[in-house]
Length: 189
Length: 189
DNA sequence: TTAATAAGTTGAACTTGTTCAATTTTTTTT
DNA sequence: AAAAAAAATTGAACAAGTTCAACTTATTAA
Image (tube, rainbow over all chains, first blue to last red; front, side, top):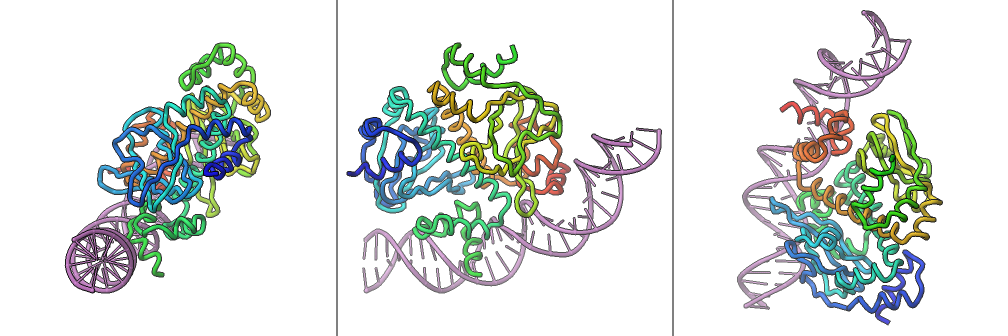
């Protein structure tokens, strides 16, 4: 049952019939992404959405000054989406890089649109998922405003211990919005 | 036609029939909120969602240290929601304060739930609205990471000139995540 | 297994932004 | 219109975080 974890994840957001869930699954195809490979690259248009079944990804952007900024890490059970590029079919600002050998379930844009039209529950599912994500982004902004870099670091490794243990310092610092040198100084005190 | 602006706003997100739109409108009640009054207060549970027809609001939180952090300003055409408190019926972290005499359209939670169940297009509408909001929050985080306070300030007044002109420096600084003293120094150079 | 490359550490000088306190200006209340 | 309160400004001392460069330690590739 390669879809059972995926199904449970959906059921945790929305009440859904077995048959609807089964139909949804038919549109999600398994894909392997090996360590250091990119599922999406900045500049390309995003035509898919993905669900992480195994492994871990980093979603980040590189700004004009060449600095990396990590939006989030996607471990098992997380979604990989570039909402902007997917919705508007514009070039993406994001990179999605596998941090280890990973497996994702992928749905193509045309299939997603079909599902939205065919199954209203899919609208509800993604409405709820988007709202949960929104809550998390709002909280993150508030934390960036109210906590120091040191506090943000310890909060991060407490909240995401499993993912954090897989990360290089540089990757964590680009999530926190500080330099890797300063993160190193935070750690050694 | 007090609902025509509201209707146009919805139509800009989703294709919808006149009759569906008319039914939606029946659940949104006009409410006046005068300057300095609060539509929502931190600690109370949010049982409504609102649409700004006239005026302007500030949505902010006060953290443990007593510092204010402004999430966003909601001018004409913006939505006022505490997604977290509304969805989970938990005490809110947010305050929604009218910055001038304002008029909002309000829907109660039970009516919103009825609409979600009754009209699938409402799910789609809020799915799309949530995803647009998500895009904006992601971009804001990236900007906080990649721009200096000065750059963020000029970006803000360029992007929201109308709202910005109504604001006190203290309100802008709490949006940017800096002190009002430092904002004053930025301005006078 | 040894190069080669990437990652992590450390220190000194620097920049950005904060804190606190005093002063002025603007807005609100009486 | 005067008094009171809130907002904005300024400066000096300070703290948080950056930059650059040198060095050490891990990883990866040949």
